[in-house]
Structure formats: structure tokens, C-alpha cells
Amino acid sequence: MARKTPIERYRNIGIMAHIDAGKTTTTERVLYYTGVSHKIGEVHDGAATMDWMEQEQERGITITSAATTCFWNGMEKQFP
Image (cartoon, rainbow, N blue to C red; front, side):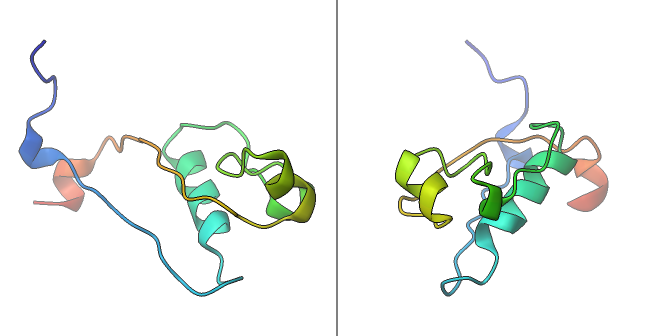
């Protein structure tokens, strides 16, 4: 099956930072503003989309790495 979007338009982004720096919070906002989720999940509520493990939700911390996909409509304007 052929790609719908040319590979030149893809962007891979990694978020790495120190403990409690806001990585999951940032990711939740990216997912919300790109339309992947319709509610911003909060870490302290155990509702973060990327923190799917029961231990992560109970403890309010991220234990495993995670990957997701999102799309941004105005990409050609953001990345000429």
C-alpha cells in the first residue's frame, strides 16, 4: 500500500528530560492539541494517555517508554 503522505513530511520527535520535568504533561498537551485525544489527561489523576500501566496510574509516574502518532494539519507552514 502506498503512503498517503510523502516521507519528506514526516517528523519524529523524542521527549527526554529529568524526572518530574513534565515529559508526560507535555505529551498529553501535544495529543490534545493535535486532536488525538479529546481530553487532557493529568498525571496526578492517573488519567494520562501514555501512562497505561496500572502501576503508572497508581503512582503517578511513568515507568515505561511509549510511542504514539499524531498529525498536524498546517505542517507545511511549520516545516517549510
